[in-house]
Image (cartoon, rainbow, N blue to C red; front, side, top):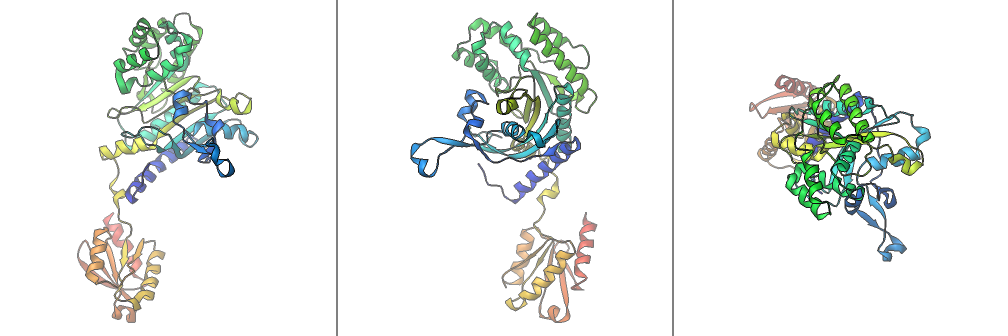
Length: 440
């Protein structure tokens, strides 16, 4: 968990602003939920590994001595969304499209781009099983990545039913499917050897491990129309009906994505697992070359809302990880220069304490012109005040000496050109605005 200094905050707001604008172009509406959920709401939704990473909150007051927990910090934004839809279903449209950008908490081991408190930028559609939903989510994520300046990202796509069929084809028994998916989810981080070692620890037989990993030796691009890699996978799943249906669903999704700017970004990756246990259909991740792990991911979770409402509501979503995006953009120097701007356009200098009222009046006039203004609060030497403005990259200093106060004027010093000019106090703001416009 970290502190964010001013430039950090500006960078975060810049990225969030772009993502929000893209999501809203696709008709998604904003939603916010509390940081805290009932513990029972979260438990059992993320698998055993996820359960261990939930930050639990101990009971309070007279129940404190029990050492038991009844609340928890939210682990993601998807389960709270499912609770909201179940709780407020009567107030929501049948086809509900929402985005949510808020922090989540996980008791994870910190690493590059991985923190215990981090923001997720979620976008979800509820109420339809159509492949249009997955295609539109991938298109929205691709648009956001493009507008942030990423040129080398890919969106990997797979299907949970296809994975299940491949596990069966490899000879892995159903009781071991869940732990196998958790291990497979780490393939891009620890490699085939690491996954094989974890599968061995979890009791997967050697021949089954070998067969399974051989399925993922080739990660071909998924193109529009009949695809050789999907044909190969259909051959592997054989007569497994759900596996063949999954392949058909992937073909439908990709044929729709082909009509969008995301077309060239889609890759079929049959090893993509996604560790969360609530996924039921297509699953996706977005990756860049120089980051182990993903910048975000998601998938279809048609059964999650029903856990709260007893009524099945189909749903699919995609979540971008703000922190990881910021890490990569910082390392690549992708942020525009204006984010490193100064905190103000003008500093109003204070010659002595008796001039404080005049300084406040001039600052008010300058702000009315649309300028960002700092009043230096102490009657330090003028050289020290100018040095402070220069150190903060404030381009102009407004000087109010006794003569200016008596005459109703203000002398404006341009620190870039080291020139100064005196204006009437009511005219100074417009002059500074014009000077800033000329500089772009």
